[in-house]
Amino acid sequence: MNVRPNASAELAILVVAAGRGARAGDGLPKQYRSLAGRSVLAHALSALHRAAPDALLAPVIHPDDLELYGACVAELDASVAGRLKAPAFGGATRQDSVRAGLEALEGDRPGIVLIHDAARVFASAALIERAIVAARAHGAAIPGVAVTDTIKEIDADSAIVATAPRARLRAVQTPQAFDFDLILSAHRKAAAAGANELTDDAAIAEWAGHRVHVFEGDAANMKITSASDISLAEARLIRDLQDIRTGQGYDVHAFGPGDHIWLGGIKITHDHGLIGHSDADVLSHAITDALFGALADGDIGSHFPPSDPQWRGAASKIFLAAAAAAVRACGGMIAHVDATLICERPKVGPHRDAIRAAIAAIIDVPLDRVAIKATTSERLGFTGREEGIAATAIATIRLPL
Ligand code: MG
Image (cartoon, rainbow, N blue to C red; front, side):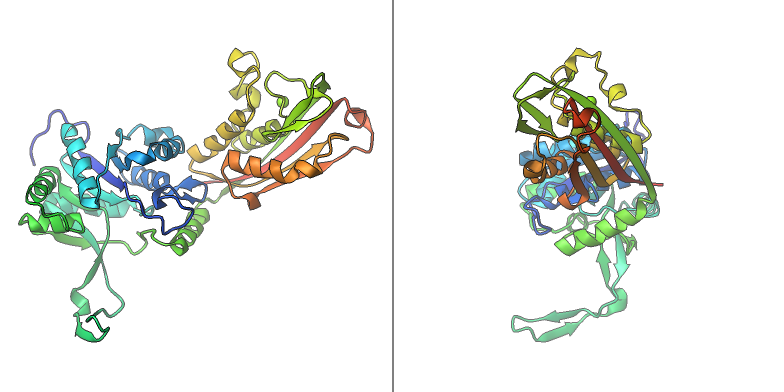
């Protein structure tokens, strides 16, 4: 292998995330679909970092997806984000996108590059190790798994024309692994020759005249394509989040002059306002504290000190979204939030659905994982005298062990 004195990483992993495929539902490209609380791409990048902590992660995205990509990066643990190269922008085809990613990596001069689909979120350390070893030994290598179904070739009328010998068939996966210079040069040659219908990087290496080795893949390294794959992948990811924690939160704000209050990010007309340093959204504050409590990571006051003028009059959904992001940054998910408002007035019932939907949107979980309840205190105590509103909340989160 060439000596690369200026290498910033011996290994780069190019993550192809520029596709438009929305077959997995939600109307979003599938790499940005939510999966157990984080985007598919955030899961893929996190799994790759766990498997190869020293690798440079090089995403290729669609230029229309910058906002979605920014949200994905916000879901990453700092250690993952720290290995992330600025995204390259993909082209019209997967082949164009990979070439753009390789060109962007040229200055980093990695020895080996792995080319991986963002839709595969279960790449294991053992698989990545086999990929690196095979690339070093063969220059071009891809993972393949034995085919268990018999494969038939059919004609245009669906009649069988051939039965392939199953023992010699492999279903191939990613990451496909290459000597960096070999695959960059093959991509450049293919582009210059107008050979633009090569479906994977192995085909490009073959087209350029290289022998491509097939190493042992991993049946667990599934590719997310359809909505049912999303469900399957989600079940596997949730199963792996075994550290289940509960946090509680409690908050009170006093009534004062005003004509509206904020509850769960919803503005509600009332004959008083609530007094507070921020927007005094007592419900959002209680849920924020429940989330920080579940993480055993201080409270709303330690994260957003009232002494800091930037939080004066702030919309409390900022605090709530930040607490939810802190759960995701640990690789976790919010399993459930249950909150109760305690007040005589305003009547919460008419606003409950809107509040619930707003909370679910702010913390980015499905509606059926959020419960909002309300009660009076039977005219007893400070809430009974309508001096203020109290809120309690419980949050259940799941973290990796
Ligand atoms: Mg408060």
